[in-house]
Image (tube, rainbow, N blue to C red):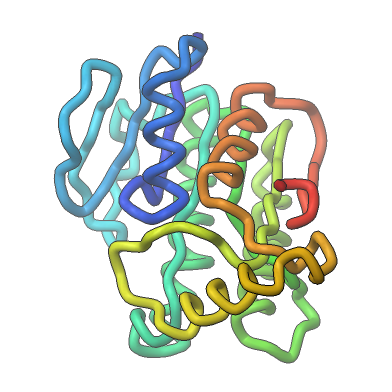
Amino acid sequence: MKRILLVGATGLVGSHVLRQALADPGVAQVVAPTRKSLVPHPKLLNPVVDFNQLPQDAEWWRADAVVCTLGTTIRVAGSQAAFYKVDHDHPLEVAYLARRHGARAFALNSALGADTASRVFYSRTKGETERDLQAVGYPSLTLVRPGLIGGVRQESRPAEQLAVRLSQWVQPLLPRRYRVVPADRIAHHLLQAALAGAPGVHVLPSEALL
């Protein structure tokens, strides 16, 4: 059985990862650092942290694998710089600290279109995060790239919600890579990749998640 470190447990995809991991007999414990306390569970260790000042040598960094679902929008973050910190800097710091404490697998919820050469700031940030994670040295790294994500978010994302509704309406006509991917399907692939820990770098495009 494995110990999974989950960051982003309060988000749409992360909350599904948390539920699936707690129910998985192959998971001995889920370590989920969050800003606010989660509902207690016998298999859950929930340190309350400030992601701007993460503890460097906490015992709970010791895990077999990491699932990262941290992410926001520029509107919610308030600026490109604040967005970059959440979607790039925080995942990188988590990756380094967990690797330093022995983690061997890392699964990231990235995005369709992630590309360091993109002219779109969002896609370029995702691409840079993927690139920089590869330099951390995980024996197993999985980059999951969903397009539109289906599910009910706690935070309001009106443009994304409208795009999801429109896409669901024309779903049968869309190429698979542009179809809405349910959050629980993304969570499933992230968790299974972390548990399997297959050697190398693996990219799961949106159409592979359905």
